[in-house]
Amino acid sequence: MNQENTENIEKEIIENESTSEQTQENIEIPVVELTNEEKLQEDLAKEKDKFLRLFAEFENFKKRTAKERIDLFKTANQEVLVAMLPVMDDFDRAMVQISKTEDELLLKGVELIHEKLKSTLVSKGLEQVEISVGDVFNADFAEAITQIPAPSDDLKGKIVDVVEKGYKLGDKIIRFPKVVIGQ
Image (cartoon, rainbow, N blue to C red; front, side):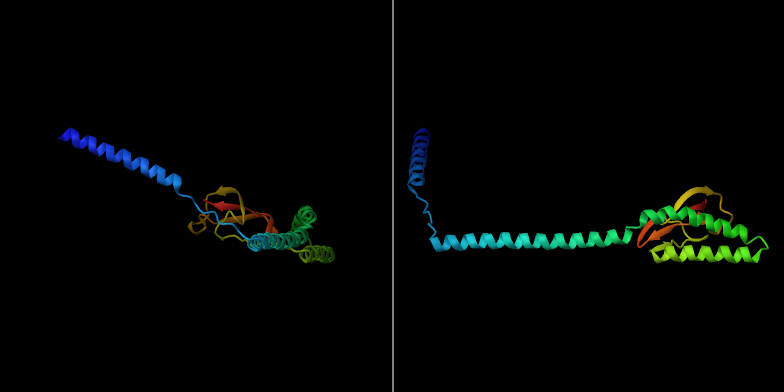
């Protein structure tokens, strides 16, 4: 009986498979034909989408180029200002030495020239990076050239000396201040 049941079950499975294959072959998927008006509306929607994307891309391009242009104008004179920084440093050192002399006229004349140079550079957008002895060292705003043992405990990890001034043009630092850090 077991063998007969098994054979009957196998026959039923084979019959079911063959009828399901025939049914799948006989099923036709209806193809929806679009009318000319519907096709035109679909094409119009595609073209509108293309147009909107192209327009948005063009607007982004205009904004990006305008921003780049503004940035270029802000930093156009950067090379000249960077070239003038050593002259400014020399003037600062000269002012220290001339202030030690007793010649008041020489001191006054050099001070006037120094201030005129400074004000001209400031009018072109140059600013000095504000950093002083005792500030906490931040590598984003200063360059450490060396570390020395801190003269006191409160100067550990802080700036002990500013060797060279730093300058920025707008928001961009064009020369980092060089500092000595207490260890």
